[in-house]
Amino acid sequence: IEIEVVYGTDIANLVATFTLSDNATAKVGVDMQTSGDTSNDFTDVVTYVVTSEDGSLTKVWNVSVSMADNTNADILSFHLPGQTKDAEIDAQNRIINVEVAYGTDLANLIASFTLSPQATAYIGPVRQVSDTSAIDYTFEVTLTVIAGDGITEQDWIIIVSYSPPNTET
Image (cartoon, rainbow, N blue to C red):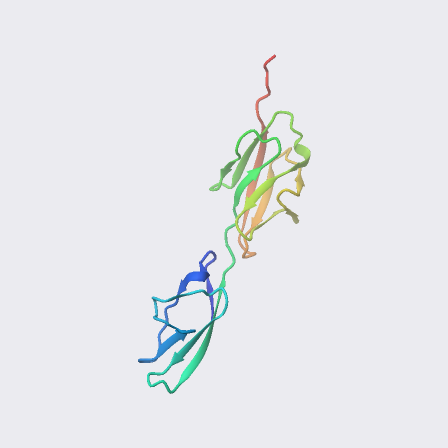
C-alpha cells in the first residue's frame, strides 16, 4: 500500500484508519493496531500482519507513506549588505522593499534570503542562490520562486532604495 500525504505532515506519528474483515486483528510487530487510534512511525515501510478471526490465515501488508512536494513559493526573509532596517516583505502583493545605506553600490549585491522549503529562485533562466548570486539592484528585480512541486511559481518584485543621506556637518 502506497500513500502520499500533504507536505508538512508528521509521518513519524501517523494514525491509520483501516477496515478489516469481521473479527480479524492487525498487528505491527507485537503491537495490536486499532483503526483511528494506534499511531505508527511511517518514516520507513510499516508492516501490518492481519490475522483472521480463527487465527488460521494471516496476510502481510506493507504500508509506505511519502510526503507530497511543497506547493509554497514564498520568500520568507531577505537581506542585502548595507541594509539599514528589516526588509518589508509584502507577501500578499509579493513585493519586497529594502533600504540600504546611502551610496551603497547596487550593481553587484549578494542577497541572503530564505524561501519556502524545497523552493528555488530564478531571474530569467538563471538560478539564484542565497549568499552566492550577485545581482544588479539598480532597478527593481523580478525574482521568480518555484515551489518544490515544480509547478507552482510566483514572481516577487524586489525594490531597493537608499536611506536618506546624512546632511549633518
